[in-house]
Image 1 (cartoon, helix red, strand yellow):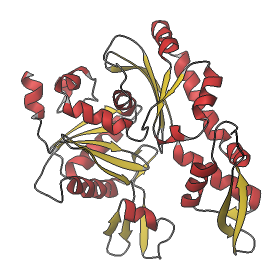
Image 2: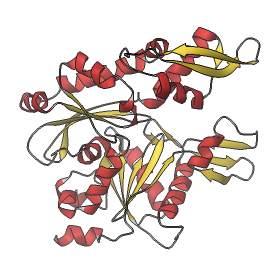
Image 3: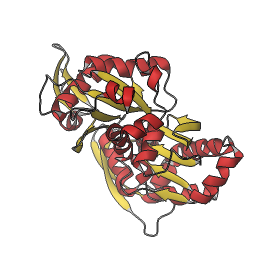
Length: 351
């Protein structure tokens, strides 16, 4: 145990965070997942005061009067608005500790695999200003693989595809670290955008983010479905400006989603091409594990299987894989020592 455990001093206030583009999940050591809320902050423009965070703030997106603005401070997996991220983290850390502002936890945060040093610093500083005593970063694909139960500390290849809200991270992991990876800024949000653009082009109808996400969940798919699905979509007519309803079907939405899905498939192919031959053999035997909210799109596993000729494995709860993996690193000191964390000035000696 020695120095590492001394550094981390595992207390029950310690937190594991999945700081996602769409959702923030918080895991408290010994208690499990205590918080799962949208990454949205609503502020009053003139006073710059925070009105709502998380679920309440998401309800306000697209529905606010002029003086209120709903902000998503994380874009494509990284911090786009430093101040708002800090406020959001402060709120979530306090909420996880029942509003106890005296707790200064140690925090491990899941971040995208291709995050730059500047972006890493932004995450660390946001968490520190929000009340964290020490901050450690772990790459999301590694965390997702741990959360999915893959034996990543062994000398064998494990491939994971983590499709989140802002990014899709693909990695081959062996001996606790990433051997090769691929990351594209195409995931759940880009799918929503593709649906909004398709409905606009095809029907001259403007729809909001909420409606696009609803369409994706209810009739979206990556592969032809056994039964045809339809859905009523409400929006504003671009010509008359009057609210209007149209009916869309799964085939149309599949067409709308083709570009983002194709981009993810291409990234998966690139990652496979860059995999060392010894580990490629392991992937043929074990298959590719897909996780993250975006992996819940019906038919995606079938599409991947068809494109790669590899077994595709889905996990029971893809939304929580990353935070459960980060939580496991928080809970198990031996695992913490075996995993390659992203080093910083403070913890570089122990990563």
